[in-house]
Amino acid sequence: MSNSLLTIQTAEKKSVKDQVKVGLGRAFSILFNGRANELANLPTSYPSGLVDKMLMAFLKEKARVGNDTDFFEQLHADFWQGHGGEVFSSNCDHRFDDLFLNHQAHDLELLANFWVKSECKHIVEIGCCSGLHLQHLTTLLHGVESAIGIDINPSQIKANNRNPKFDSRIRFISGDGGAWVMENAKPNTLFVTNGGVLEYFSRHRLNEIVNHISTNLGNAMFFTVEPVAADYDPNTTIESIPFGEELSFSHNYRDLFESNGLNVLHQRPVDFESWRMMTTIASTNS
Ligand SMILES: C[S@@+](CC[C@H](N)C(=O)[O-])C[C@H]1O[C@@H](n2cnc3c(N)ncnc32)[C@H](O)[C@@H]1O
Image 1: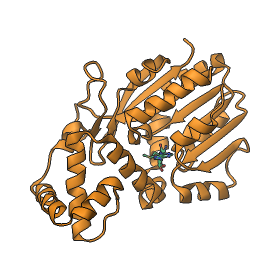
Image 2: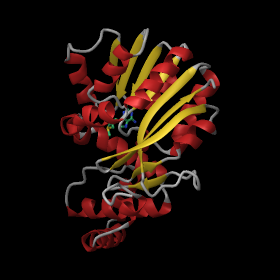
Image 3: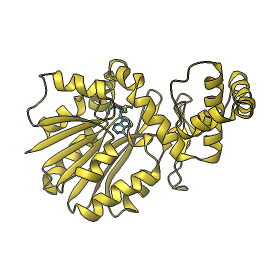
Image 4: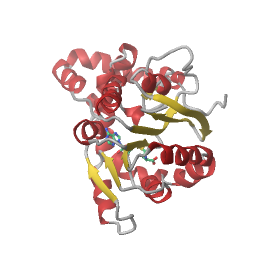
């Protein structure tokens, strides 16, 4: 295993500086109990001022140890709605060529074959960011009738909607991808995530979303490319565990789909830079 891959251990290990922050945060949580409760209920990724910064360091560590998945889900949503989501594409769009096109051609070829057999007509990408991946799938897969890209970052969606380069079948919508699927998804849809999106959802919410699709939509497929911790063993656990610097979730994707009524047609990890990316193709049909 390469040392640079993100792990559960990365999240557990604390430098002396981090330990001091957590310790100060613990003391501040007694002194500023009201503010600590506010931040526990509505965590921020952008704390300003010493007290909030130390409190957030303490609250994140407390949530990690106590496995408070709702806290992390709110924290991640706050991060992606704000500046973190605005700048992601300019820092990370190189992954589309360097990782996706260069290292995942095999997965894409299999997806194209399953798509033809599936009779799916629609694509929904959650966390579409700058839309590169959605544009590629919409023009690559045969006979796509509609494609919707949803992202929680409103600035990114505004930029996509102003950009004339996209195929006319594509529509971009700003909002929470999970809520959108629960309210709007149709049968015969391929649901897509790429480069890490489901890692920001709690397993509880993912169960609701996948279960809704398999129970109520009939024909559907998933194509998900999600980072998992390099020290996460899906053969021995189905628990979702915070990992890496971001404290996103390492999920057991096979279990997520199979326990919610889908068949896993293909699964393969690819290591790239600091990520172990797990591709999963799952379907309501075998
Ligand atoms: C790590 S980036 C991946 C972006 C893109 N798919 C890629 O491969 O480059 C995560 C993306 O998911 C979006 N996102 C995070 N949580 C979301 C949610 N609950 N609903 C919709 N989009 C979300 C973020 O705004 C961001 O664009």
